[in-house]
Image (cartoon, helix red, strand yellow):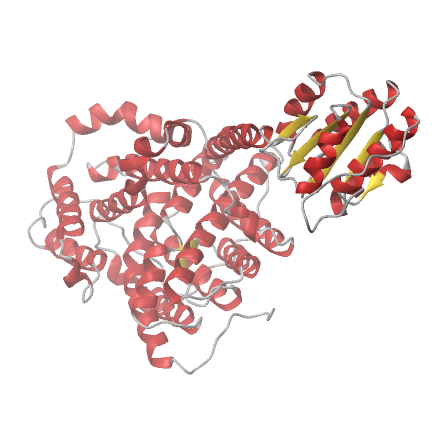
Length: 566
């Protein structure tokens, strides 16, 4: 695995055009997210430049465009509000330190090769989580959209103050916000190929503010400092250290999910395979550097990535070109943005919120599974009104419990205690003949498929219901995996038979299954000569043992042609 991303100059024209197009779309989004977060428009621009550059240089997805995104903005907004409330003087600096911590966690995740596990969560959880973030982003923009500053208290504070904000709304700012939404929602897609609707809204909204609403007292972005950003050294507070670490972990995890989901989309479009762990390292470096220079956190941006690919971008050069163009804006063109109305940026952010909502799954979730629907809406509600990490934790826990219960019920049907031929158990003609000769005196405890911990109850129930028998055969020939809990339940059955003086044969245990039983000490109840390769050998040995006990010759078994006889 190389240190830097795959960059070559065989597609310069496509990469440059892709980078330029992605930069045009990134500019209004960076400004909108910077203002929405409370860190300022300049912070959004810095984040777009720095995260985009380092993620493109060190990431594992050549066409991925990284920048501040809606989900990252929502979490960062909450981080700023919390830390500034607790320490007005150093709160913003501590928020940028949280961005650095998020990047550090992402780098650690990458080096630990956790990339493939990050997105291994049920879709209803991801859908509810993302939709909840979309709802939060929309609600937090209601204040600026109506001509007011965002109230304190986050979602609850905004909803509480909504009646008062509506009664004292600013008609000019509302008109600009409505204009922005109208263009973004109604602009035909064929035109958006030539002019990004976000950029059109930004320019047209600014011109309206300077002409039609020139006499109104509009709230504007104001002056954005030109030049390179100043260094933001990490700032810690002993009282807030635990909170900062948790916020950094949440922000880092969200960035991982956001980036890797976007990388999956890029892979599906380009028919390539990205390096998830390397991507996490690249994202982490980008966020660490962004926080160090007062920039917003970022992740893989779906819109920018898709536009980059459609415009011809194929290598990481497109991401570097995009970052370079935005850097030119930061260094020389930033003063041109000072007259942009905040209401226009609020309209852009509201549209992003609508786009984050998983409309496709929301429309049909109730038709697919009521449990999945309940999980999705539950995660969405917890995300909006409680906490992001609580929402994901509760959602994943409940979804996994339901999945384990469903798998356990399916696997429980594969736990059978039989004394004669059972058509549900795949047995050869020889095995059937041997079972008939046993005449009910040999009980075969047949298990099939992976035995996870949820199957332990079924094993115990079958064990309890076992009829009297002379010999027990535990058949693990069709078991590829034996969990600890299931193994202990199986050990109880073996021990009870051994304590009752019934010989126990173990057939087909191999590989990890056999090692699991060895490590647990279960094999102490089974003589070495009773460990056999398959059920046929176990049945033959059991019949020999019965014949020896009865003092008779072992019977010859009549079987179909092509099979061996005892």
